Length: 360
Image 1 (cartoon, rainbow, N blue to C red):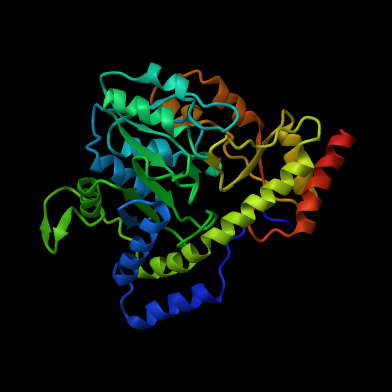
Image 2: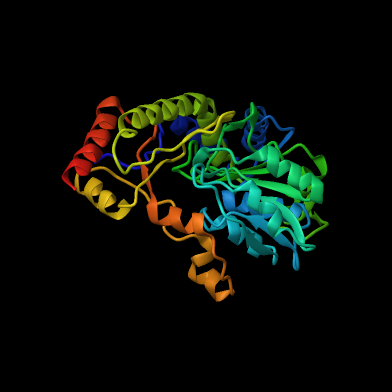
């Protein structure tokens, strides 16, 4: 079986965790601080605040910007549900704007139509590791005095016009096991704004800026030194992981782009795609997925139901018609692209899809 994802953990991570366990300091400590400092270099930001999940990163970032009841945040309906749910956690309302079909990211031309007097922020998603159109999004945000909170949970190291995502506003990254790098579970917030960073630090630690002094309502969102020790090792490998993903994606595209009915992912000029997912489009998605799985090739559908069509959001009264998101949900299929793929496995994937195309 060629799996759709395969976390890479070796002896270096095992040794790092063992050292922390033997130290006796296993909650948030020096390893977390070291990981945060290392991540500022990776993200090109002044501050990084480690938390216990990507969802927590989004939630804390929103709260740090003062998002709350009665506010609206414009975001994508074509993402994992945590993107929108993090807005609900603040008692604000997600407002969905449709995507563009080539990158699966927010269509910047449609964002302005969604802005009202209640809009306080835009939350673009750098889906699959491809940067959103940040130049235009930033201009819109500046014109309307809106915060930008980047959902970069799938985009570690991705760049837009040479600038790393997560540095255009307040960034949120995930370190779930299947992401481009992992801490087992975890997340991190990036910012160049000291006030936002300090508030995020308080929010993750019960609203406290010093021991037993609690100035605001906060939560327990802390990362452990165990997770941070894994993250430090993984961060050192991220460049090689990314290069391998990009090389695998290039080989997949070279083999698949001539197959009728298959649309390969595109990379917009000026963008560096880090290929958390390699996602094709086909109108016969379900048949192809079944064929690949039957032939020992793992696939994923990211995502089969757009957020505004989820039962929770239907119950909340969402009745949006967002045709590009809905069409994408019926056509997208993610193929293995992870760094542990070898050339033989890539050839198997390509040849199996070609065989399916010829047989149908």
